[in-house]
Length: 236
Ligand SMILES: [Zn+2]
Image (tube, rainbow, N blue to C red; front, side):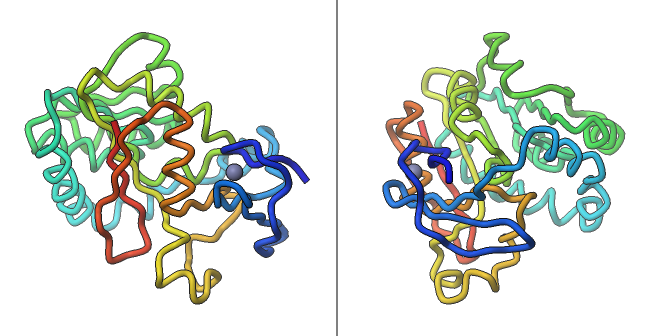
C-alpha cells in the first residue's frame, strides 16, 4: 500500500472496493483515494475512449445558466476581470464567465473537447494545453475556476501548485468536487454515483480539501453551502 497522495501519511484504512479498484482513507487528512493508483499509461488508455462531450452537449443552455449563477456569486468577491477555467471541457463555464463580463479563457488537455468548445462558443478563447504549461508561462488570473477536475488526478499536490501560480495578487480560486462528507453520502457512500474509479481517483471532504490546499499555500479556504453533495471551495 502506498502513501496518501495529498499529505504523504502512511497506509490508510480500507474504505471499500469498486469495479476492481481498492479505496483507502487517509487517517491523517481524511482523503479517500484509489490504491494502487493507475499508471499514466493506464489512464491515457482510459481517457483515449473517454469523451464527455456527448453527455455535456445535452442541456447546454441549462449548463451555461447554472455556471452563470455560480460565477456571479464568485464575481462578487473578485477583483479584476481575468478569468481562466482549468479543465473547461466544451466551454460552457467560459461562455458563462464571458456573459458575466470576464475576459475568459478555457484550457483543457482534451483536444476533442477544445475543438468542440471553439465551435460552440466562438466569442470565447480556448487553448489546448495543461495548467502546468500556463503556470510556467507566468500568466496570472483574477479568478481561477476549476470544476469537477481534481477528483480525476493522481497527483493533486502538483496540480494545486500550478493552480497557485496562476492566481494573481488579490485573485481567488473556485474549485468544485464531489463531497464524500456530505450528509446525504455518509449514510451510504456507494449510493453516490460519483464513486467511479478510475475516472475518479480522489474523494474529498471539507477537511481533506482544506488541508491539501493549505499545504499548497492557500491561506484562506472557505466553503459555499451546497444542497447537493458537491464541495464548493473559495480560496486565496
Ligand atoms: Zn492524507
